[in-house]
Image 1: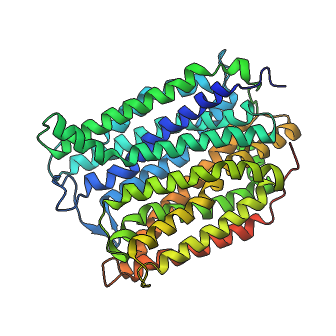
Image 2: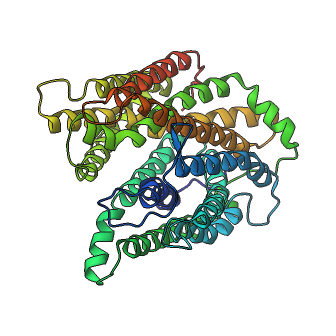
Length: 447
């Protein structure tokens, strides 16, 4: 049994780790493509070739997809290492501590190319820096997530901790999405000559802040005090086999996979939805993000209440169905006489409702799957489960980016936007299928 109940202050400290990690990964998502494939009006130099490969993919798309795939393959190895660890201070926290400085260093080095003009050397640089970043950040997040089922003994505890974890993640997105605004402030405040230098300084500052947040979790939570987990002696091949033959887990993964492809389409396509379908300025992006975050937070207490009353499964199914209609709404953006800003604000606010539950409940559900497996097999494989989950999440994100880019062949400009709209139809189908699959999930009745 757990030695001590995790107090509220430690739950907040746990959320800080997710916020720090979220800042780092979302700095990559928000800035990377913009920096290496800048618009002509950005004031940034061209750093790598702009040539399109196979009629759909540019160099940066191939680089990022390759980095994610290598990262995904690394997941089960760090998970197995964590599960089997016999470190005197615990299986998770010591690994997380080792990962913080490399994650910070590799994150800002991604944005410090060796040459400030188009160069093959820059491609080689960003490839190795991205691999270093993904490996380092994964070394933090896999053990971090594996702590959740150990820190939260009951179903309600898992929901609460997953909620704070989700709050941290969303705050991290909010901080990272304001990187360009901070770059403007720094550039004018310190008379920085080039736009590139201002963005680089911004990344350094935010990455350092993220590292501090990640360190808070490491320093605040005594794993030996709040967790009871014995090192796993099971070989990785057997652990993976047991994990992948867990029917409930497989149903969870398939639904999760479809959902993350859909979410990646939203994040990849937001600027296209705004500028192409609605012909609104790019600057509205930050306001939309704030709207989505605030609306989502309003529904967090509702999600917690309903999860206790009616169960998590039904809420996830309803949320996936609601999200499928958000995607259908994307297809019709700009096709009505309603004001363009009203259309996008309504759609974003509506999307925040299902995203509130889909940001909270999956980790709580997975924690329960892991707990049940640990009781049945007498083996603690928390990290392996989260590694397999994140492997499929990363594959889904890679698929989402690739599918989005491929569909743009059929139109990505004002007046020729069919490819952008097709992504709405794809998202609708994926989320609808995910909801149908999850109806077969068997939920444990726990308190």
